[in-house]
Amino acid sequence: MTELWNGNLHYGLWRDENDTSSFAEAAEEMTNEMIRRLAPAPGARILDVGCGNGAPAQQLARACPVEVVGISVSERQVARANERARAAGLADRLSFEQIDAMNLPYPAASFDGAWALESMLHMPDKVQVLSEVARVVKPGGHMIIADMVYKTPEDRTVDVSSRFSTIYASLTPLEEYEGVIERAGLVCLNIRDVTKETFPTNEAFAAGLRSRAEQFIEILGTEGYELLIGNQEKIARMPELGYVLITAQRL
Image (cartoon, rainbow, N blue to C red):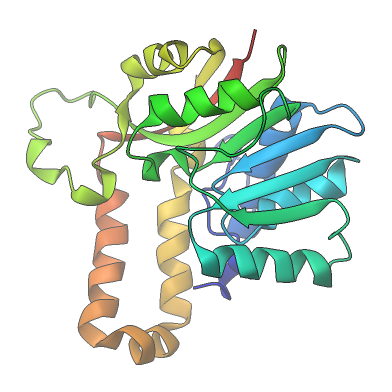
C-alpha cells in the first residue's frame, strides 16, 4: 500500500468538474488546502494529529518554515515517518512520536496550531481528542480537520442503516460536528462540505489497486484482494458518506 502514490493515501481535492488533476496531484491539493487554512507563521510549532507516514507533514514543512511534531499510535508509522524525514533532510524540523491523541503528554499552550488530516475518523472519542488539542494549542491557534462524515442522502427513501460498517462506526453526522468541536472548547469558524470535490478519490484508489493487482493478490490472496476492491467500489456508491474541511480556533 505504501508504494501507491508515495504512500500519500488520503482523499484528493478536485476544484470542479473541469479539474483534470491526477489522484496524486489532487491529494497534494488537499494538503495544500489544509496548509492555506492553517496559515502558520514562520517558526510556528504545529501538531499533526494522526500523522500516518508523515507525507502531509513533509509537504507542510517544505511549504512553510515551521516545526512539525506528528503523532500516531502505530510504531511502524512513526518509524517510517522519521525515516522519511531524515531522507528528505527535514529531521531538524520534523519529528514523529508514538503517542495516543486521547492523552497528549505535552504542556498546555505548547503548540501554535494543529491539524488532523483524515485521522479523526479513527478516534473513539472526538471530544476527548479535540479537548486535548485545545489544551496544548495556544489561544488564537487554529485546528484544521479533514474528515469523513455521515450525511442525510438526498433520496430519503433509501434505507442506509444496514450499510453502516464498523469501519465507519466513529463517523460523526455532518449536522452534529459543530457541537462536537464546541464541546471540546474550540470555536468552529468554518465547515465546508467538499463531498463532490473529493468524490473521484474512491474510483482513483480502486484503479490504483487494479494497476498492481498481482502484487496485492500475492499479499492478500485473491479473496482478500477482491474484497478490498469491492469495498472501495461500494464506498463510492454510498450517498450517506460525505467529506468536510473544518477550521476551528482555540480562543
